[in-house]
Image (cartoon, rainbow over all chains, first blue to last red; front, side, top):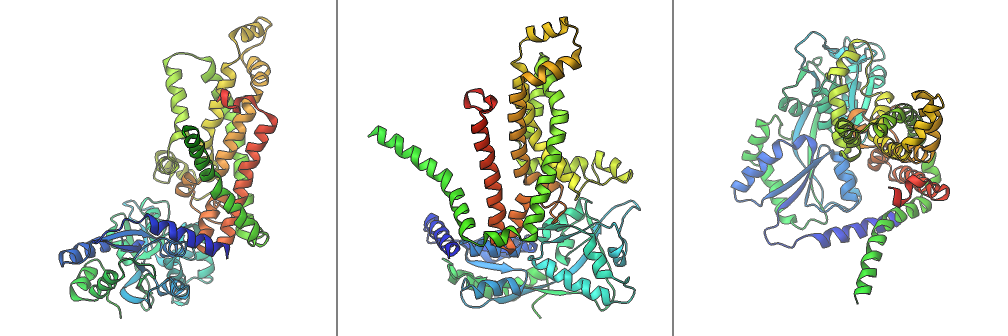
Length: 259
Length: 261
């Protein structure tokens, strides 16, 4: 109860701090993996006469907690449905969420030019001593990766005890997928699961093939927030995301359309 | 009127500084503190924090006391430059410290790659946590101890030398006992800084429960999963910090009194 009061007090303070303006931008809290595509979407939307967009990025779970603690924003773009469901259940959504785009998981390793790469094949994720960086349990990529690991454990050629051996090799739990990617880029981690779109924006990682018939597809969800001050504009942007122009930009960045 | 404004300004800032911490303690006390304190992630983090800060402090005192001695006794431009350079991590943003450590000691860094070839890998290990803590906390110790050593008059050292003491004996039997209060206060400051270390650790050591996830990292991580655990871990850190301040007041270590700072 005290927490609710604290959250309410924080919300009041935050909204009191907001500058009242007629051409208020759409404040979007976006999943880390949208860091490159959202600015491109925003400029196209603005060029179409849409409201300017003011994005900020973090892991979906971090953003969810920020919203619960009273962070003021108009639209939440989450990397999964679960995080959106939690907010809707808490009464923090304006209506229900809507799927906006799809993505897939990729296994990445540092793009070393020498022969010393520790992982050259997905089965080596189970080799003792391999350093895998994952995300914290609450971050969407961590749940997707768990699902993929379970699939790989059942795939042909999987070493026995693959999932446990993989878990034992995890050396760090990062906040968001881009932090995971960065640890692979600088060579501190030997391997990690990220989104294919993350792998595509990095010159410093290689994507390894996964066995045929495995692979996890992911869905981004948008949710207009209950305390949105630009709810109308946020809804308009969500609708625009489903249109051909937005879908083309998403496809250009490696995202798929919602199945 | 001006007296009123003066007082209002003072009260406003004092309230601002006290209220958040107090509210945190109230939430901890009225929430499920007991349950959260037995949460394995909090217990692991507490034990890891104690282990790593004791290791860091041992390293800081062992290596920092001789460094402070050298910096205090020598004069000249080079020593002054060295003294400033040694102080620098104290004012560096912790994220900068973490990035710098990672680039030097990380697998592809000049030191890290040599260690890696020798089969010693630092990143994501408890040793990395100790290094990060030592890096950010040591300057507090060295600075305090240097001030203590510098306050010892040359004539005291000369007298010891005439009595036949060599450099090592002067350091150990004259310098260290006379500067003991500075050593103690420096150690306390360094320990609290190491205990609170966050930025350099998360960059350089990563975050894994039981291995690199110290209390401050546990606060950050639990914030996403279990707010009660985050509050409990945070309350532990507040109690530790407040305990240190109270201890310093009680023992009255001179180097920590405002006029000596």
